[in-house]
Image 1: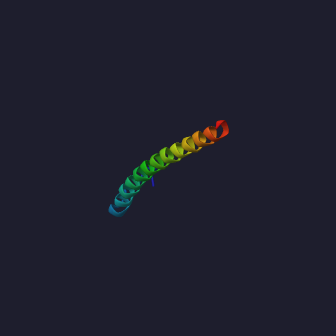
Image 2 (image 1 turned 90 degrees about the horizontal axis):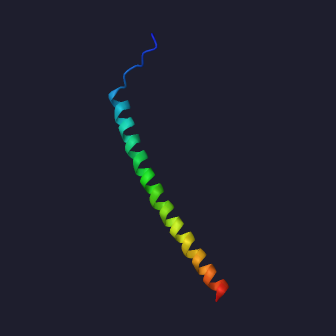
Image 3 (image 1 turned 90 degrees about the vertical axis):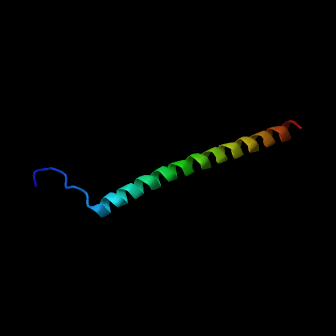
Length: 54
């Protein structure tokens, strides 16, 4: 072999496409869950501050 890359098979191309879509979906899920966790942490912090001063 002269170092050139072998072309992907149809199955490999389909899997690569699926993996790219799955990766994009998982990134969106991570962003949503991070936003939820951040909001929850802020709410808990606010509640604890109110209890400490009240």
